[in-house]
Length: 356
Image 1 (tube, rainbow, N blue to C red):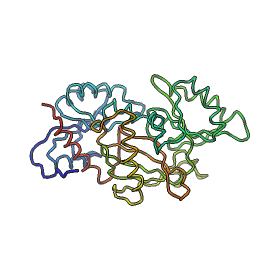
Image 2 (cartoon, helix red, strand yellow):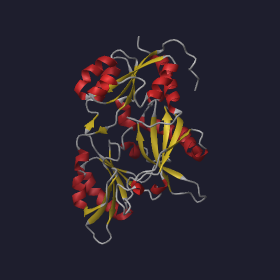
Image 3 (cartoon, helix red, strand yellow):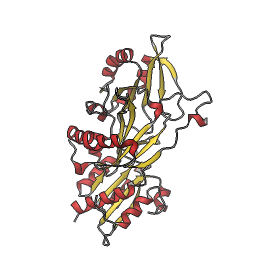
Image 4 (tube, rainbow, N blue to C red):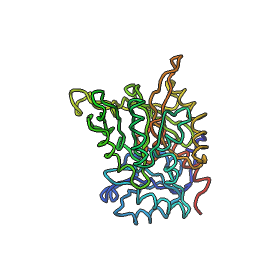
């Protein structure tokens, strides 16, 4: 990637957008927010970047702000404090239709930033025994037998974050009708209840265009999750974390120190521990994903990440990896190397099609 830090003239205007309230919108500055290092990297490259705090309550003000920029970098989760992107995504499509570029465009999110991508790309090297339920009827007809025959499963609602709508489900050996379930949300504890009752609990996940994805539980989960950060089509860093989601809390309880996830250890793309993973992502899996999902290179998010769990080791003891999810809506925190990559890719995008 070319070094653009020597640029001296203004190359365009971009907005960095995230969710907040009226007070935040009134007081925010480019230097006082969690993305300040991205603002600094953009400024070094001659890009005028402005913070845009979004809420449905003042969406018209946001729309007016975005009318004056050439591009928008978005950090808004699918679900946050009960709010979704139901109103934001049409606004972003409207802005894009008038000539600005959006990263990540809502149409691209619907291809790669939803759990259904796990099913659509299940044949790739990162895939596993993955199934898709598009309706309550399909779920009721197929899931009980699959759970009975293949052991513990993990169910994931199509759009969500922070473990919302992600469940580990396993049969209880002392009962043919009951299951043990554990929600991936922090602070959750295992429950034992009738399978039928749990499946009724999942019915809201099918509302609208909702659906459920079903994968086998990965037994190496306690060894951690590897977050692979990607700038468009090149890995820019890694984050390795000992997570606690879907792992029963210790006897001390959910608030104990032992129940908390470990720190995410950030590293650059050159981390020798993950070079095999990096090569597979860049050279094999990503190009094939783009083909399957019909995504052009220029449509890829400027910053996104793919979360991997350790799969079974090969006969030679080599690690394999199973894709857990892809995040494109609000990727943060990010490695130290990411702000420069974001800025360079933003400059490239502006040069390729700045609004006149």
